[in-house]
Amino acid sequence: MNRLNQTFYEQATVSVARQLLGKLLVRAEGGIRISGIVVEVEAYLSSDDAASHSHRGPKPRNQTMFARSGHLYVYSIHAKYCLNIVTEAAGSGAAVLIRALEPWEGTRIMAQRRSNGSPRQWTTGPARLCQALDVDRSLDGVDLCSSDQIWLERSPRITTQIPWKITTSPRIGISSAADLPLRFFIDGNRFVSGLARLHQQPRTWAFQDHVS
DNA sequence: ACGGGGATCGGCT
DNA sequence: GCCGATCCCCGTA
Image (cartoon, rainbow, N blue to C red; front, side, top):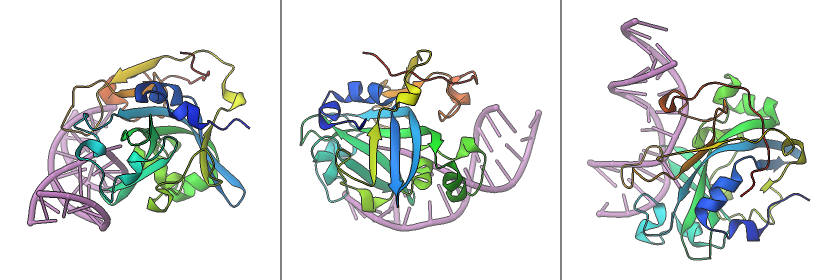
């Protein structure tokens, strides 16, 4: 199986964030796979990062951020949900936010859940992709290394092509630590959010497993 | 294409 | 009460 294991998630957060680009996020619902390729992420570091939910220590809302790496941290904001992956040693309070996916499997269901908008609107944005994959707070604290509902994997189908370039920018929508370059995305991919803002040129996309 | 404003609700002060 | 790691809709061009 190509599922990412705990050793992967245990690494330094920025390193996990960069390596998550190009991996496949899979949601399994009654034997059906709904999945997308990770094309945009943000790193949220441990308590010294003022923009991180872990900054003020464990609370009922954010306690799974302090769980062992490889667990899912799902929080609600503006009446929507966003999905994070816990990294580093247990208790660190560090995580990677998934901000955008390129739709891969189960696109019918995605379209349905996203009101049949254009593909570009299905999974471009952290709360949009949670809607498309039916992720809510009931998945908070799930272990991505052992769950049968959601996990990340390497897909052999997307690891053999032209290398991509990772671009870095400040994180979106935060007011503290707004200057830190902790957002990473696949340059030129159509499904990255905030396209215009970052002066990206629309381009065809190709994937390869990222090395180092 | 781009920007501004309102919706919406759980968690915290 | 207030505020957000957001999104959608409706202006303008």
